[in-house]
Length: 117
Image (cartoon, rainbow, N blue to C red; front, side):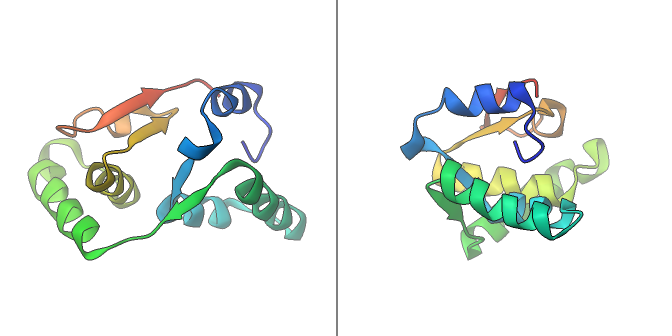
């Protein structure tokens, strides 16, 4: 969305505003991807306009993330960020919207809504 991909913007627009939440891990990934102060400013505006809440890491999320990683580390080699995002969603009963379903599709009980940017 930050790069104004039409598919990502269209997908997000289909989700009711009160249902748009973002993991703080995703926020960190977005911040890390900013290349200059304009993109950092644009990201701040994007977050304010498109998302109602940034979901924090909690002890329960940490516990769930460790369980996911212990179960999947050898077979799938999931990324730490993806595991934290999945654990956040599982603990809150949220759906993970992603353009990379293969990063999440092996996690039991996780609801995924794939899209193309």
